[in-house]
Image 1: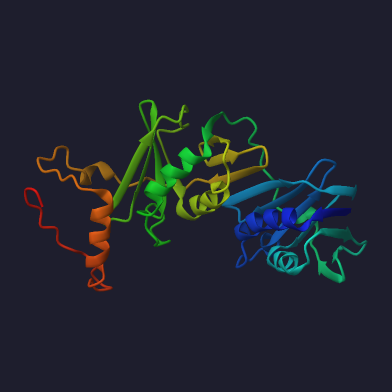
Image 2 (image 1 turned 90 degrees about the horizontal axis):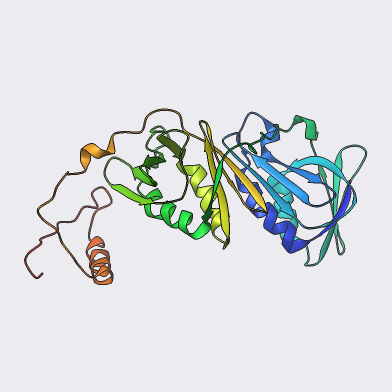
Length: 288
């Protein structure tokens, strides 16, 4: 395997793939990124068995090949290399040589055959959704999900089919966030639960995407793809709590306030709240 690639292109791909690798796993291969030098693209693959990512990078190939390389190490190396073209060569003993300018690094790789097989999701029905809309819905709910990994059903966001719309719901048991939109698609099940960590990785991928993405589900996975990348997310098993029980069916009291002014007031008052109890009291009266 012999190819050359611009530093910024390589760094961008690695920066997206490496955070998905699992560094504390009992399977060393999961801390690696699979590099596939094809005739068209350099394909980088990363997975922790819960989230998977394949991303295409433009490059110049001289000799195709595949090798799994330590994700954290190669990312650190590429960050420190000078701007310009980087050349990579796979030696006969399974080591990858990385050269740029006057710098030369050599890393021990692992056999590509040992890397987890990439599942084929081509048969999943997908809908085209603008990345900004999906990102907006995730932003408006993810913050309310639990940070406790032991509460796996709350350390996630519920995707629920409600007539023609998809509703996203998140709660940590103290607060609840909910939003619904017509995404032009149907879920394979009425409800699916997506892990919080997976959605954080998806947010990171979507931040600079300005076009539409293809979103699809099967009973066990969520799949998101563009022309450049495909991400798979394993869904959380188990039932999501019945959030409808904590939402009053009707409410006689409503408050309307200027968003910016209300937000600034809350920030001022929050300064004096304790770390243990960050609650405040709202005294709502007519006109104030």
